Image (cartoon, rainbow, N blue to C red; front, side, top):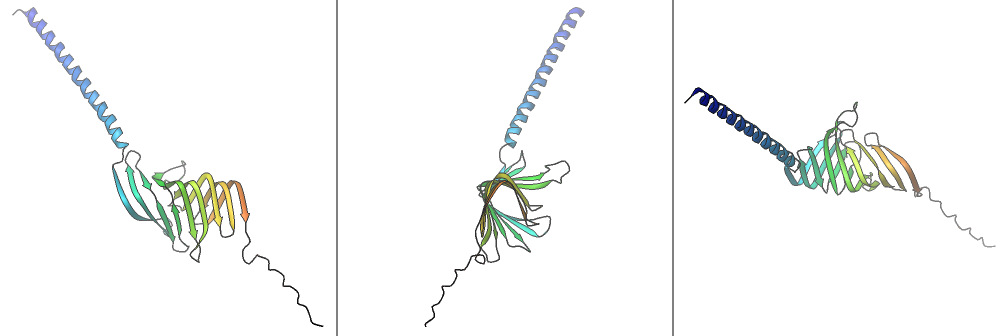
Length: 217
């Protein structure tokens, strides 16, 4: 075999190796891309769930225990969030009467930082048929609030909503749009379109004047 033919065959062999290497790189990149898409898709699906769960957590004030129960708890790894079906939250303060909250479902978001200067904290987003009740000393509800959406901050013991709210107390009915509440400070702020109807308490109800007695002549 002459030197020219050897050089030609070496060139063909090298070209074949280059093409084979390019094909291999393409296959590796294609498979990595498919794996990444598949992994992203998988992460958007729940990775586990728990039925009929019950857990307790303590607020930062170390005073309020929150007992959270529900029919089903579902974890979504991509967002690292929990969805609760038929949630019920009971807040038991060592110095105050207990409060209860319920809804059709809830989304638990962990360590959310809403503002750049604020401290990250957990949030519980209650959705659809949200009911909040605080019991009085007689064991009956003295505050009942209804809305379609409510965010609970269990660490700081605060709540907020920008939706319409309806609040009933023992002697009043109040409707408004938007609310902020601080359970630790026992404060509620209604933001706009506030309408209140007051009822008289038993102590405020006027007594009927006694009918005059007739004296016999």
